[in-house]
Image 1 (cartoon, rainbow, N blue to C red):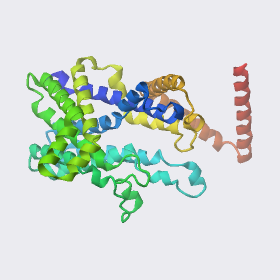
Image 2 (image 1 turned 90 degrees about the horizontal axis):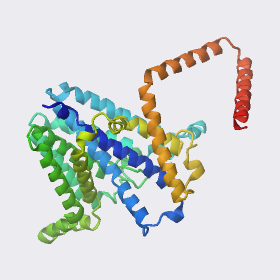
Image 3 (image 1 turned 45 degrees about the vertical axis):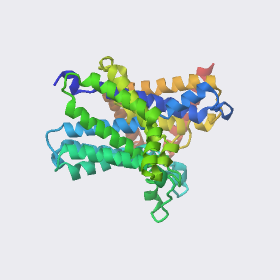
Image 4 (image 1 turned 180 degrees about the vertical axis):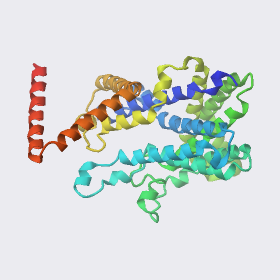
Length: 395
C-alpha cells in the first residue's frame, strides 16, 4: 500500500467543503432579509441548490469514513478497536446535539424548553453511527460482502419508502423517541431518510477498501462516480417512472414525482469524483485541517449564530434583516472567523489549557481567601474598571 492510500486526505477536504457550506448556508438562511429570498433570482436559486448539498454530503462522508476505518482493521467484532471508538464518538455527538439545544433561561424557570427534544443533525448522525455499528456486529461473522450488500439494500429501501414514512406522526411513541423518525413535532433531521446517505457512504467505503490497490483504481473510480452522479441527477426520475410502468408499483411513481433523495445522492457522487480527481492537492493543507475539526466548528458556530444556552446569538439581532451584500460579506467573515478560531485553538491547545487552569486556580484561591461581601465588592470594582477601559478604548 502506498503512503498516499493510507490516509485519504480528499475525505477531510470534502468534510471541509461541507462544513464551510454549512457555515455560510446557516448564516445567510438565518439573516438574509425576506425580500431577497426570491427563487426566480438566478443567484439565489443557485445558492439554494448548492446549500441543499451540504447535509447529504455530510452524512455520506460520515458513513464512508467510519466504515473505511472500521473495515480496515484486521480484528473483527467487538475486538475491533474502531467499534468502541465509534460508540464513544456517537454518544459524544448525540450528547452535544442535545446540549446545544438546552436553554438556561428555561432551566432557571424550572422547565426544559420543548426544542431541547428536537432531533437535529448531531443526534441523527450519532444515532446513525450506532445503527451502522449494530449492523456490522450482526453481519461481520458472515463476510464483508454480505455486510456491504445489506447496507446498499437498506439505503435503497430507505430512499424508496420516503413517501410512506414522510407523513407518519407516530403518536403511539413518546415524543422524544418519535422525534427520531418524524419531523412533525419540530425535528430538523430524522433517521429516515438521512441514515440512507450514511448507508451509501458505507457501501462506497467497502468498495474502496476492496479495490484500492488496483493500478487504475482512481481513474476508474472518478469516471464511475461521475457517471453514476450524472445518471442520478438527470435520469433517476425517468428510471423510477420506467419501474412504475413495468411493475405498476405506485411507490416508484411517488418517489419520481418528489425525487430529491436520489438527485442529491447524485450531487454527492459528482462532488466525490471532483475531490478524488484533485486528491494530490489536499495533502496536509488547511482544507484537511478544517475537515478534521468539524464537530468543534459546528458547536462554536451554533453558539455564535443561534446563541444556544442563552439565546444571544447573531440571529437575536439580525434575524432576516441583512441585504444580500451584507449577508455576503458577513458570511465570509463568519466562515473565516469560526475556522480561524478553531484552528488557532488546536494549534495552541496545550498553552491555552494551561493558562485557563492557571486563571481558574487564581479565582479559586481568591474566593477561598475572601469573605462573601468582599467578593461582591471586588466584582463591582472589576466591572467598573472594565466599563472605564471600554469607554477609554472607544475614545
